[in-house]
Image (cartoon, rainbow, N blue to C red; front, side, top):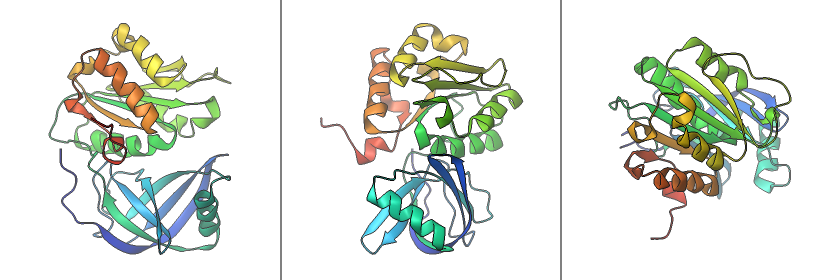
Length: 259
């Protein structure tokens, strides 16, 4: 599957909004020349901290043609680059970015159901893929699995539940290691699982993805999270004889497993 054919560009963007999505994640909205900001759903950009430091972030919005891009950024106060970025965003109204990058993009020519598995701010990449799929292929089945440590980490829970409530072809499976602090929104296609995402997936596969009517072997599978999380899920899927030919993740490019 090839990414957008556009070449990577370096440009200056306006920072039009910075908002807290929860205590640990903030959303950033950037605006630039529409033709320069074009990207495929699932791609990422790199944000310049200084002449030698570029930090990658998944683009959390599908291409709309208006030059506006959303990012979801996890704040790690103990990490130098994260603290510097947070400080920069508090004072800067412009940022230098490089985009687009990444081969893990939605294959809009495929009609296979989508199985999307994300952890933490890996949701950003899946958000862009879901938005594009709903616009380009509104009937394509989507099963979104979003794993976090605890309930408050589901920083876009309302949006994910809204997709499942609004679209009969979308199912949202929230996965948290700790119990929910309050129930999720009510809906036939909204579920919660407690545990680690790879173990939850393994259990769900035993029961045919919890009645979601999606056989993973028939799906295009996109995974977004840490290398450890992604490969743990890949191992579970491969143990179920699911071919990795239709599995896609940026992790395969930046943290390949030794052969």
